[in-house]
Image (tube, rainbow, N blue to C red; front, top):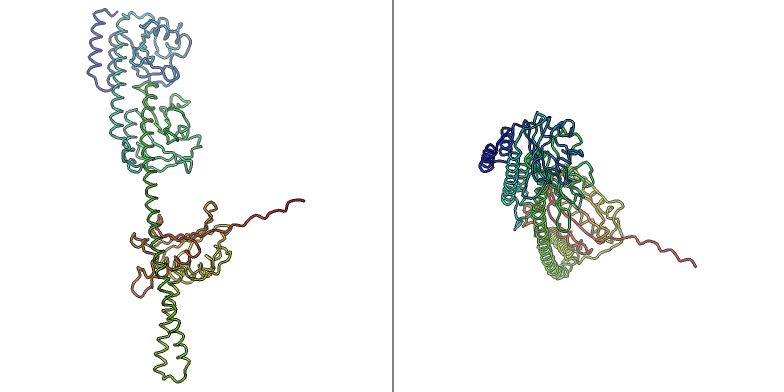
Length: 567
């Protein structure tokens, strides 16, 4: 039997262990070894109450493994725990096999002592030690000293975890001050690795809620998995999806208690929306009670949610600013093209009248039979060049939108099909594959079919030149009923448009072709034709790198027939 002197020695050694041993696992192992050596117990277990009140193993020595099932679940075992907590001191439990068989089986012991742990946060905790003899000759004061040492150790461990967690989160999670979401992506990988280490998990995962697709997207994982994996929000088998619908962190245990450690899911909630889920896979709850673990996960989830929401809000602001800069650029280009169009129209009209007079007189001269062959040949050359100048003037008028439209209701798909049919032979000769994705039913527009076909042809021929030999061209039509627009999108597999080219691509006589290879009027004419139809044409690069031209025109809708009211 331990004496008071021995109890004092135990207290001194326990204090030394708590003060000097670093690391929660090392400290609890040392305290368990002291407990068994000081009072002759063959097994010692520390239990802490979980969120729903059940007691589970936090640390143990002398057990075969660390069972996940709840302890002290029978009436007699619960009463014994209640007596110890009420007495605020240890209680001797003798003849366990007949009195409290649950504890006898769990400890493989004939007798035991159960003592409360005076934890700082007031959470229920118990020290349970077992003996082979039915009557344990132990000084209970010594057990009290050991229980207090375990309580100090658990409190210190909790403080260490809180400090480590705060330090790591402060160092690894950006505060979102000036950090957009893409910028914090690499840091979140470090966060997940830190969380897995701090919380004793096999892996930590961070999932973001994509509201547009109703999916969860993996953005970071401690095991090195690349981001991008997706699961539907409605997936009942996914812990991430189930966690999104929770009000707080929850432990997911397997029915088989001898299986792998449990998982934890915690929702990441913003002020107005669900942001995602934090998932901890395979959590080994060896040095922390379930309640402590849940509290820490909740603290982490709150910090991550704040960081993600701030980053997303910053992304929204930057996106809005980018859209306003893009809109300003488009307006500036439109104003520039409008001013240029007005200028070109004026010049073309001024040139057209005298040019038509010149062409008329040349035709009269060519009709004369009194011209010598040399003079007739010279006049024919002048007439040919005058006709070419007239075509240039006509093109300029088309760019300025001064051409005369013979508009009627037409099928957009039909115009696209006819334009591609004109270039079929050239596209085959250049080994360019063409993909058509035409909306059904075909969008209807009010347009001049000849001029609109010319605009589409000019864009297609521009794509042919950009591709060269061997490549891909795609053309698609769509109807946006909400915007009241019908669109034609033409994409090529060419090198795309440089920034300086994209800004000037619709200007008359601007070309990137070699001298003599083109006039630089093709896209300018397309621009003028589309604008004359009260539409827009935009040029950009698509994700594959090539150029993308989008023509948008006011759509025509069939009005429902009105039924005559019955008389």
